[in-house]
Length: 526
Ligand code: NAD
Image (tube, rainbow, N blue to C red; front, side, top):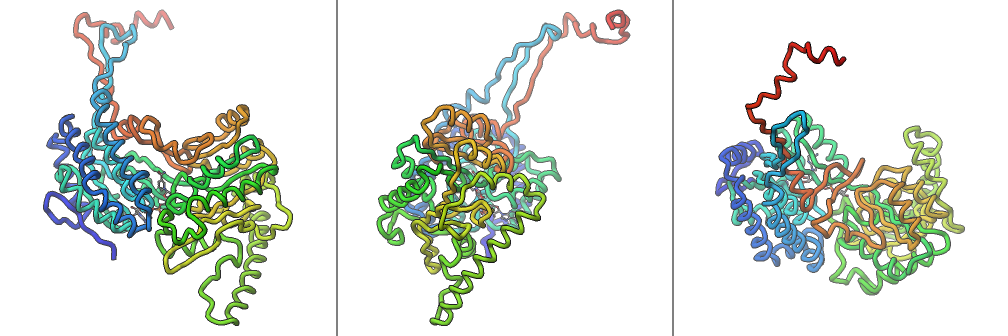
């Protein structure tokens, strides 16, 4: 049973309806608008993090087996720096911005002003459960909103901690936490919020957008997708391998902007696969299962989902109890592999809607001797269901019709596909939905420019992975299937603000009379 508690100024509410009504009252009172209130909230948010680092580390270890340093560097420090960044600039961002008026309107003055959207809802996922709830909260507070935060029930310890701490540090009349899963979120979505900021998967994104449409509520959708990473032979492969391995295997691959798969040119593809294996060894030792720097998969459902993406027979469907069962498991795996090939071939023949995708299949080269469409396991492929452990796994020679290429992996499996060249890689990427991020490792300027101009993604990184989201000066968001809208810094402030146009005209002289009817003077000009 998910916990369902709403924390509002000492009241123990049970419904999203009540939470919304209270926030609405608080916003209408005007308390969230003064810059002094906003500053106090952002300072309190920073204090909250600073005074409870250990609690967050413990909660995330319990939720995700997340290494302490990852929690601190990739979540807590980012929340603190975002809160500081927006606090120090929101005064300028919310001030009047004068705009020159056209001659036809003169004499007049015009300006824009940022006003808070009102009562906003933030729905967070489980993979960075503190960061993705509290970083948008910082932006929403800087913009002067009353805020309802709905953490993910799948990271239940972090959710509980957020629900306990926020009312202790922030203005509990204007910031509420509602815990729970689909049912509780559904009830919140029935309320006429002034903005909904959702981070998570595409399926729920559609639910959020449909619900928002009932009230014409604007939405920001921070979704995911399969983020490609292109590598050619012009780069230092050791550096590329380490940066790819870091981006992919941080948080055990459960990162929205992790490189989902690699497109490598034939000259270096196999060497790169091996070097990524070496980088994994350097990061996590011979056995990542005993490394305190390597995380775990969030739950059993995701472990089972990930196992199905590995080449047939890599992981038994269940623990074999006798030699007979083991034989059956090997036979089953072989049948499964043949079945996958037939299904993939049939899908290729029959699925009309996948035409563009099929078109891209021709860009991928086959690797002699690799039989399974998922590729050959170069390293990893080890799973311990009891501890929700999946080893960092590199697959080589993966084909585009493999299951692992059919969905966002969101786990520690890195397929490496071989492409003829950059042009084929661009064509392949463009045959698929637009990703949240794309990464290019090439020293060839024209190759980099071709990716920049000819592919579309939420963000693009040259010779790096993940790190583009570290700066509050850069907007962060998706495009197409990977999301809409953005946040971080000024982009976040504007997401949670309405930019209002104001025009002021003097009454005398009444120049507007030039456009009043009757239009006799104008007729001669038509
Ligand atoms: P999740 O399961 O935690 O769901 C996200 C939120 O939606 C949770 O708060 C959950 O309670 C709520 N929810 C779940 N089912 C619902 C329903 N039926 N109705 C209403 N609300 C519901 O997270 P997830 O979807 O597993 O997250 C993983 C996905 O999120 C991946 O695709 C990943 O790429 C994406 N993601 C994107 C970003 C980004 O910044 N763009 C960041 C992290 C994760």
